[in-house]
Length: 427
Image 1 (cartoon, rainbow, N blue to C red):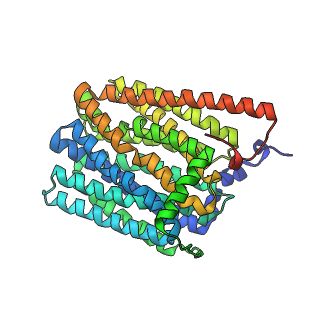
Image 2 (cartoon, rainbow, N blue to C red):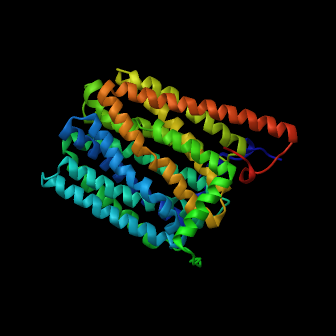
C-alpha cells in the first residue's frame, strides 16, 4: 500500500485543501476571509484608540472585558438558538448586525465624537453578536462539507482566521500611521458586505426543527458535554488556558507605546507576528491527523506557546519580540484548533450547536476575568509580569496534558485497544 509520501505532490496539495471542493464552503470561506481581515483592522484600531484616549493599561483590560462578557452571558443560550435555527440565516443576521456596529463606530470616530465609554459600549454590542455568530459558524461547517472533510474545513477555517490576523493588523498599522483609526473602522464595515453577498449564494438543505423548550435543550446540552469525558476534559482545559493564558492581545498597545517605545506600525507588526505563527500552525493542521497526532498537538501547542509567551514578556528588542510572538501564535492555534477538531469529531450532530456554544464559552467567554486580571496586574506591576502569568498558565497546562497522555498510553498498552478518534477519551 502506497504511503502518503509516495503520492504525487499535486495530490498531496489537493488533499490539504479538500474541503474547498465543496461549493458552499468555498463561498463561505472566501467571504469570511475578507470579513475577518476587516474585523482585525477594527480590533487593532479600537485598542489603539482606547490607549490613545486614556493612556491606561487597565482601560485596555476593561475594553477586553466588555467585548467578552456578553459571550460569557449569552453563549450557552446561543447554542440552543443555533440548534433550532437555519444556520445560514442566523449567520446572515449576525453579520448584518456587525455591519451596523462597525458603521456606528466609524461614524463616531469620523465625527470626533467617540469617547472611551462609547468604545466600551460598542465592544459589548460586538460581543453579544459574536456569542451567536461563533457557534453558528462552527456548527455550520459540517452542513457544508460533511463529516469526512470536517477536520480539513476546521483547519482551513482556522487558516482564514489567522491569515486575516496577519493581513488585517499589518494593514491597520499602516493606516493608523497614515490616516488614523477611522479608516480601519470604515474598512471593516465595507468587508461585511462581501461576506453577506457570499452567504446569499450558499445553498443548504433545510433540516426539520425539534420542538422542545429552550431550557430543556440547554440543560440537555450541558449534561451531554459533562457526561462525555473527552468533551468535558477538553472544554475544562480550554477554559483555563483561554481565560488566564491567552490575554497577550490586551496588552500589545502597552508594549508598542511604552515598553518598546515604538509606534502603530510596530503594534501592527506584533499582532501580525502572532497571526503569522498561527497561520503556519493552521496550514500544518490541514494534513490528515490521527488521534495521537491530535493529542500530541495539545502538548506541543501549549509548550511552544508558554515558552514563546515567557520570552516575549521580557523582550526589549523588537526582532526578538516578533519572533517570540510568532512562536506563541503557532502554539496557541495548534492547541486551540486541535481541540476544536477533537470536539467536533466526538460530538453527535444533534448536540453540535450546543457543544460549539460550550466551546465558544470556554474559548472566548472566560476571557473577561483574564482581561481584567491582566490589565490590573499590568497597571500595578507592569505588562511583563501579566504576560509572565499567562506563560506560567500555558506551561502548567502542558504539564497536565503530558500527564494525561502517559495515562492514556499506559491504558491503551494494557488493553491493546485501537479505536477511532470519535470514541477516545482524548482530554
